[in-house]
Length: 271
Image 1 (cartoon, rainbow, N blue to C red):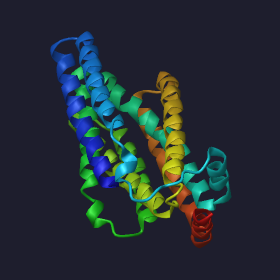
Image 2: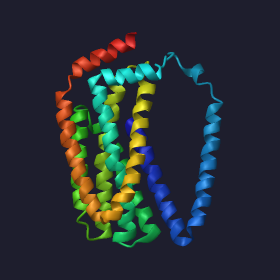
Image 3: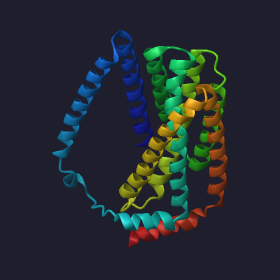
């Protein structure tokens, strides 16, 4: 399921970015706003149809969701969840800067305009699509592979900071999201396996909320960062940050007592 989600996100990013870039190249930004509004309206109609479905009717097991207070205490109490919370707070700080940097690389470094922005974001989506195809090859060592992929993301950004051609930046963009997508799949798979069924939805949603909030803050910070540093230098700094994060995560995951954390999570599911 995690690989499928990554695939859908990637395909949407590929076609959406390419379509947006072509429309902006052939017309103007105002037309993009019209299409954006139209697609949002269509999405709202599709979602509205889902609200009419009785989900409980097809559900065989009644899942009792924990309260916000109980789930918060669980994250604080379980060491492994604290580590995942740290990952979901720190990683978006670099990911958020990514989104701004790729945009500026197309516009300022290579002067490719709106079409260039569409192409580079389509490349990012292609990386996610390719990463989803690797799910069947991953049969264990999810955390080790996830941390290694973060390290490779950092290496990718170091190489991106030395780009001389736009095609080179496109290839590196695909490579960066390819390894980043594998990392996301690995960590999400571990979370799905260890979280208690009765608390899985709420806990996973809470962790994702922290992740998205962290990314939003990072994108604001990226705006200030790119005012001081050129895009390629910012990419170099992001690459170093990824590598530091990977080393920190490697150390922290080695310290955590997995068995003790799993036992606490199982006991919380029984209550």
